[in-house]
Picture: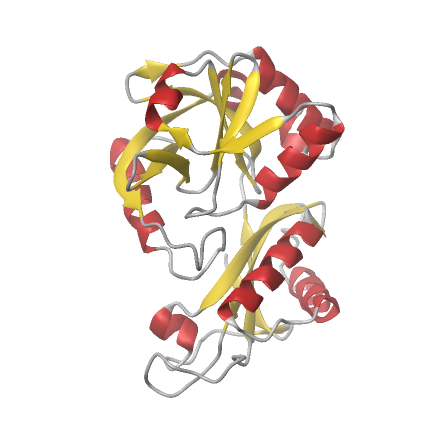
Length: 281
């Protein structure tokens, strides 16, 4: 059962005048909770603060957010061994119309949700994906952020549901590979790990950041740059990262197949050693 809290207290409704509801004027973070502790908390908070600054919304204080999260987890009926917590920060209740005072008054909600681990065979043998028809608009103002406006992801994810696939990969208008509907994507070509630049669109996932930092500490460099769709088809390995499942190999996208490769296995072991337990095989 989903449970929502505002300022640490249970809540069952949101004002219809809230700008998050009216305009998608806000941000969110979905945090993996493992054994009662939020994973990659610092990365989530840094991205949330960066997003609030970009959207000119009052930044909730980190100690207050942590206290509210702990209160929500403490009231969540014993599901915190393996669950997710979603923090939503909107610019609050305002008058009708797009314009608002700057900075916007933050309204913060925290939801707690039961999660089920991805099947072990997916980590061993990979997942199936499709290339989505939905393209991502280039918008440097909100590039990299997890805003409440997720219409492109809703449309692309609906394609995955219709195709009964684990994930869908998305391109921008210039046929550059960007990310998945709920994940970041990495390719491996000639033993080089490559991930698309997110300067124009897409979301800078916290697990993507953690993977980049972990691989750098282990002496594995990652090339962050524009990636054409042709490079996707010609590469040797593909894997996905996400805050909830860690990293997963991709075995198929459409008619193209890749065997789970040795470089992906090294990445997964590195993440497992860094505390992402799902990647331990």
